[in-house]
Amino acid sequence: MKTNKLIPLILTAALALSACASAADSATIAASAAETPESTAESAIEPGTEAVETDTLYGLNYSYSQSVVYEDLPTLDDEWNFAGTNVYKNDLNAGQVSLFYSCDDWCLADPYVTSDAVYLLTYNRDRDNKIIALSPDGTKTHEIPFDPYASTVVLYSDRYFYCMDGYAPYDTASGFRLDLQTGETAPWNLPVETISVANAAGDFAVTERIVSDYPVPFPRDEEISDALLQNSLREYDLTDIATGKPARKITEFPYKGTAEGAVFAAYAYLGKAGNDFYFRFEHAMSSEERSVTNVFRVRSDSIQEDLGISSDLFVQALRQNGELRWLFSRDGSQGTVTVYDLHGAVLAQVTPPDGMQVYYPVSMLDDGRLLLVIGYDEEHDNRSRYAVMNADAFLNGSTEYTEMEFVG
Image 1 (spheres, one colour):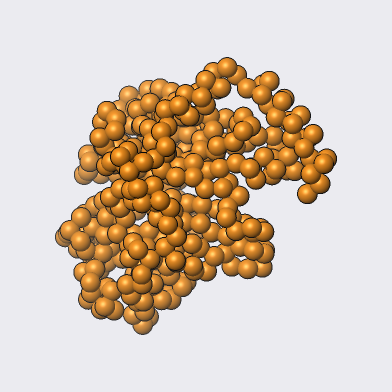
Image 2: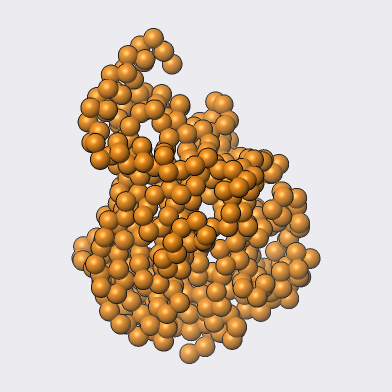
């Protein structure tokens, strides 16, 4: 990097951006900074007591902790042309899977499941898109216009979808709340420097935003932007879902990561366990290398701790009703599943049974059983073959699982 030439460019860009930044955006950034206290042991209390409770908040993996799991898949005609969508219902207590709903639309892969409804998002470029609302018995109750190409659902509740249609750092972040009964929308006033909404944590959203001396959005100039981001931070916050304002800082990381010289670096929020929060950091030192994953825990006293997991396999989270229970990695679809506890110790290395197409845990159910994917059903749109088994039995290498039986 030629610093003597780049500094004037950065200053020029910063001045231009400052001049263009609106007073409203500046006030939002200043208010967010003022209202986000530094995390302390005293402030690290259980989410749900720090702000007015609005509605039960669901993360995008919510349905996999419940006793019923829905999956929607495209159907094909005899010539392998798209013919519609089938939605399958897995009743994990009854041990049965059945066809729940069918339509002519192309729908996104993951239904949004609430306490009293199932919502599907259609996804067609050549027609008007919508939300299809279904009752628990599979009856369509109503539709709401919605364009998934323009906006993304990041969290939801029984009543609302919380959506984003702009993201930092190369755009001003913006969001809105969609009423699932009336279709009405209202602004969701996230800070303009918000990068993402990672998940739900109790009654709060876990959000990621950029902290920089320069205003968002950054210029779309590779050299200038790279220099600005090199000196920026990623801050994760607990954010009040009603106001969109950060209520408490969780932690921060260098935007470009902690691996000096890496050609690739990315952070991801894994989940929370009690008052501790977990993050994954992936990086690669060259384009030919597999990326390496490290896992960090931010303790309730705000200390950031490397768990000592260093793997060239993708480290995933296993949750139970929103709370993190295990970490695990798997060596391909048929390889060994390595399970870690929340301190980074290896609990087990599980070898899939012979003949399995895939074999890995998805979540821990409310009653403590594991939900597994053990293959795909070619006769029914290649739906996932789900099974349940005792968690300890899985760790001990048992094959005593119960697969869902197709009925209907």
